[in-house]
Structures are given as C-alpha cells and as structure tokens.
Image (cartoon, rainbow, N blue to C red; front, side, top):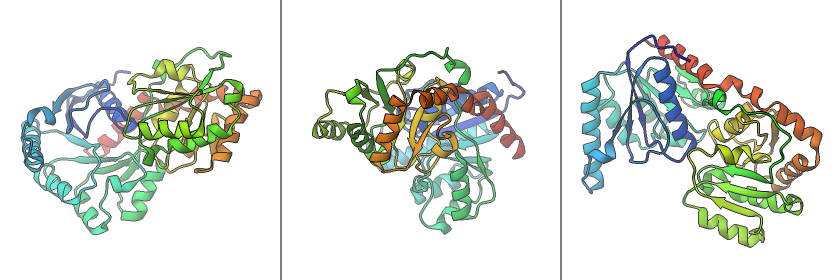
Length: 365
C-alpha cells in the first residue's frame, strides 16, 4: 500500500512502545500513518522501546535526567510543549493512559490548547483514560477533535457514560499480508497464551485451572505462556500448586513471537478485560484458531464461536476446559474453525484500518 498524498505532520504520543498489545498497536499506527503520507513523529514518555515503528522518535526519558519525580514530570512537560511548538503539527494522536486528572488538565491547557487532538482509548477499563468524576472528564476532553475507541463496545460505553458525540470505533490492525501461510494439517504439541504477565488484567490463573481440569496433559498437549511481567513468580507458584509443572513452560517476552504462534494447536485468552486484543487477531491471521473468554471488550467482535474459534463464559474454568477438550477431540470442529481463521480477520488488515484513520483525519480538517 502506498497512499502518500500529503506531507502533513502528525504526532503520536505514547507512554512507551514496549511489551504490550496497546504499545504494539501504537507502533503499527505509526506505520499506517507513514503509509498514508504523513510526516510521523512519536513522543514516548518512557524509555521502553521494543517494537518497530515509523517516524522520528522523541524519547522524553532520555532528555530529562532529574531524579526528583515531580521536577522530572515538569521538565518533560516543558520539553514536550517546546517540541510541539517547533513542529506545529496538523494532528496529535494521544495513546497514553490518562487517569490522573490534574496531570491531564495541565497537559490539555499547557501543551494541547492550539492543536487538533485525537484521544485513543485502548481498554474497556475506562479508569485508565477518564477521571471517575464526569465533570472533570468533560472539562479535560472538551477540546478533543475526536475520541477513538478500539472496539465498538468501548465507543458505546464512552458515549453512554460521558455523552460525548465525537466518538469513533477504529479497530486495532494486523498485517495480514505478512502473516499468511500455507494452511497445513500440522497439529501443534502445545497451546499458547501470550501477553504481559499481569494477573489483575490477564487472569492467567483461570487458564491454569482450566488446563488442569482438561484432558490436554493426558494427550501430551502442553501449555506455553509467553511474556514478561510482575506476576511471573505468582504463576509459577500456581503451576506447582496445581502439579502441572511438567506440562507448562514459561517463555520471556518476544517482540516477534510469530514462529511460536504458528506452531501452536490453538491460542487462549482469559483476560478480565481487554480493548481489542491483538492476541486474537494476530493468531487468527496466522491460521491458528482461538479460544477466548467473553470479556469486555473485543473478543465477541473478533471470535465467531464455532466458526473461527470458541467463545466461552468468563471466569468459568469448567467451560473453558471443555472448550479446550473439544479442540483436541472434535477434529471436525477444529478443522472448520481453522479453515476460517485468516478470512475472518481480513477486515482488520492494516491497509483497511489505515483507510479508516484517513477518513477520520479528513473529517476533522
């Protein structure tokens, strides 16, 4: 794809570009905007850069050496304001979590007051992005040109709670052309779960309990958990407690886990909440069926149960274990879901999602 039709400057503001689905989606957004012809700049608040991106990077953490937390934040805000003034961006797309009202009030009025701002909401847990006080939220977002939720459910919830009229749903993308592979009868010797090891979000203990109840280990189908995060030791203790350490393998974060995905029998997602989970669309784009809990939000927009995967009730280890068993013992069901994987996510291809961003940007010129 090459839609280079303009040379307007656009700034993506991110917390980081490292070790998470939201961060990877932000990195992909930089590539899509570059393909549309924008001159892309990225401002990262933290020095955590893992994913490939397009554009010029300003790493605020590397500019500010002050060890005092408050003074460091003030210095970052000053550098940020100067940077924005130097470049006079046509658009600013803010992908950060924005849950501290006073900080956001300062950024909105000190840095953003003269620009077209698009705020992205990448999780159904709106506490990451909005103050619990609706008046304060409306005060901070009053100048927004658009608010983009990465799922339809997020869009509807933002509209319902805050009454904003300029809310849009644009899904996270996947690079279908880079992931298409020959469909084979290969059956992986393991199932896979991957993402940040954060129990309060990803709920890996549900996965472990369901795996324990399933018949997978009896049939020599292991479990790989791929990722890094604060709760790795907790999960290892849980594995020992369930007496399944012989069958469960932990692998560290990999920014390009594609070979591991392609060798899996299927991929599982057990999160308490999501936005529009990359785990699902990436896996499907490689021709790997998925089993997901029906959490808010994203899975029920991606997974058509019995067509490209299985969707089960959240926090129900018995139902999840039965779904796992069905993908081992019901070959007709598994083959049917596998045959529909790639075509089920073609609408999320980065070329298609880039056009949705282009349409939005054109509408707020």
